[in-house]
Length: 206
Image 1 (cartoon, rainbow, N blue to C red):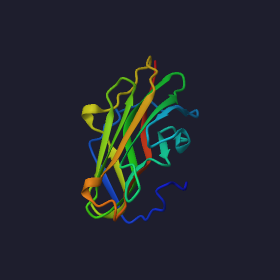
Image 2: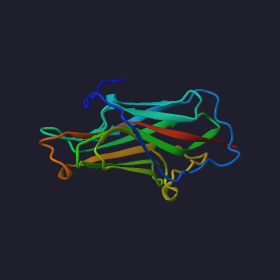
Image 3: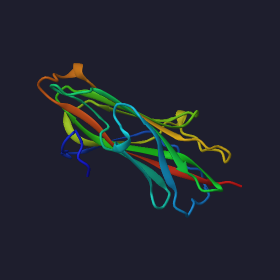
Image 4: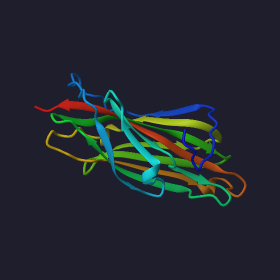
């Protein structure tokens, strides 16, 4: 596991937040059998750099993952920033004769909160120009724990691309801690996002 600026992690409990999931359509066509690659086209934001993000498609082409090394917000004595952002533009190299969509998104990370600390996360996944799938997570209790959020809101779900569409996928993340809710001069709090996983829905083009 890469060493990052947030230091070691103590895993005490798992907290999950589930919301409505956009289910794949019945009788979906098979996924491509050949290897599918993904490219990181651009990286922006205070919480990620090109060498701190890795994207890969699973060998069975059912999903792809994005691993983040330094995407986190922290507060403490002489420590910051309390808010950080990341925007990635990804290109899935779809084989000829196929198109795809995103049925489900999962995000996970670690939170270490001082007494009285509060924070939050907002993540969005969208094809350029189309409505996004959004995930939100609040951090309010004193604890060390791994967290995860799964699903997507039906009202803003990511659409499946038409066969004639070639659009990049944009992932945005906003992480923050509220420095007014605890004394950063006496304690340290941080929240980190480790990974995004997006499940792919394939469709064969006629």
